[in-house]
Length: 218
Image 1 (cartoon, rainbow, N blue to C red):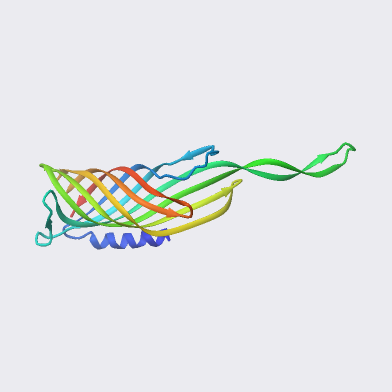
Image 2 (cartoon, rainbow, N blue to C red; image 1 turned 90 degrees about the vertical axis):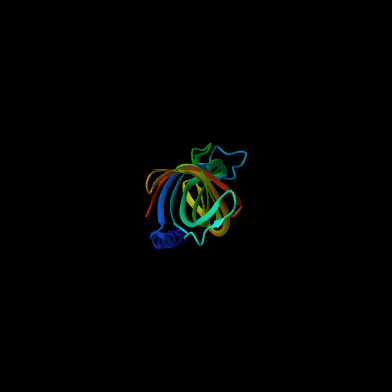
């Protein structure tokens, strides 16, 4: 499913990369909440984030003045969130050959523990209107409230062997807030905070990330 999402995003990006359009790339660090039982040996919810996006600026006649900001564009993005994980040890029973009191070998059931790990990854295709407000020459605050088609994958491994894999695609709310600065004509740098909801099996929450990136206008 994630490859379908990526292909659809790239097709949309190419359509938007035209006159009055722009493309950008963000890299960031985020947090994906993952359920960690109290007995967890390790819980990793800090993740790396990759975001590729493109948008188009609306013509003056189509823009909307909302007082503090103007709705002046529409944007699509593909976001890839690397895995969050939790690791525990589960009780297990194994057969072992043990020498008995008579010197013979016999099978004996022994109690032991084996490692158990869950890995959670996200792929999101987002679409959102773009609201901008100029704070000073070259600086713009922006807000991008929209929707995301989020594919969440949860993989389970027991004793280093795949045990179960679940994938769920849901429509979830999306929001990006940030600041953009035009360093040269048509070239901007920006920082943003993004929120994306997700759900798969018994795992649900909101991924949050802080991103830095660059943007080129056409």
